[in-house]
Image (cartoon, rainbow, N blue to C red):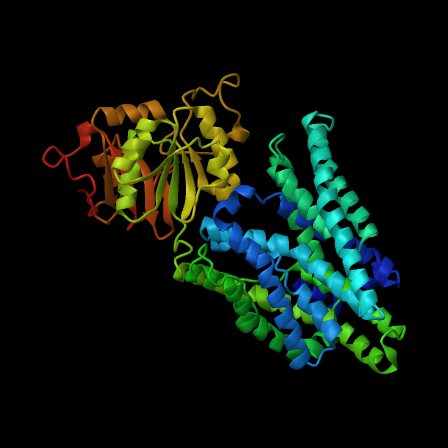
Length: 595
């Protein structure tokens, strides 16, 4: 955004000079922006699972209906009474600013890492309200352009009917066709991401030809429908779209900010500041608290968090750019009469800069405040240092128990009922589930967990699990046990590209560690000091397996290549029975030096 704005101010280059055709209706710039937004909303729809609605469906429904109506009404009233805007333009901006958007919500959720319930609510709201805001803007525009109330009512009802028919029924039909094409393998795998990209472009363009801005609803519903069908997997398509989204968002912010001049910003600065303060302090909190009034599905803390999380993104900027040109052109043609037309034309030229200021302001405010607010309300972990164990064998339970004693969140998954039962008997959080299941990926609450330890007896399962959770934890947060086959023979060993970081020791696999525990090995915590450093520790316990480290950087698994540990760090290690102190074999959880 800063680069695009600076490009226009200091280089003399204006984006419109290259892409605009002089006619706002047919500007290639706005056509490209609209298509980019459609791709973003389609990708957002692919992330929405109906399973998330079990515990958060009612709050999402209220936020996407009642809260939207309240927000649009309050913003419209403020812009008319406090900022002096014409009611038509005020209603337009009031409708557009109901949107939040996946362009800013998705990275913000990664940063905040709230509870699964709050993440679902915010994600659904951010994606679903975007086409709703665009539809409201279309209705406002049609009413503003109508000559009388009867015409306005007829045009609005017609627009709503076409949008619902095209955007919902058309999208569901298209999703079914795509599903059958993929199910019958009529589209080669390597072409599927590009094929879906073409389908999105076609659906968006065709819908907009039938009714302005109906395309955003169509692509959003199309994404949701494909995400929730069970016939074929669209995971690889989602990964492609996520990579494409980063590029598109960057391009969009450069393009749209490059269209704004310093004079435009200066002229809208004080109005933008007042509007920003109203939206953050009054508009959003009032609409959220009133819409969720008497809701048993949300707590006061959850409502408070939602009330102070509504960053605006690229969809608001794109839709504003389109309708600002429409209003400006209509005013230039004298559509609103000799007295109002010049006023509306001048105010229309302010709208893009005004929304630009709102985007910058809300992203800065919510981006800085959301994470500490969520932690303060207990809706996000203060530190994302917990561990998800795939496998709950005895040695994993021992490691989890000692970590839990030190305040770290640990969660164990295993398909073996005895292992899960034994974990719960120790007071550990455990669930009977397959690490490769959809349940593990979509329904587990991983709040506070930042690491996967793939520790099942099956080497292939460990490798696949690590690959699947790279999306959740990043490559640095996924670890697996070394495979049983360590000869490196290209016929037997797992391919390097599907392996992750090796845990603990590259010479000990699952069977070796289990054997040490079966022979009486114990978990031990030791703090590294000047008198008892890591070299002294290894000298004292030469057969130990260092499993985890905890220092100023947080808790993390010990890599197989570990050679040194900083002073002050805590080392969690599995000590063979023959190396345990004979006099005090029970002192396995002490924290002072060589205990």
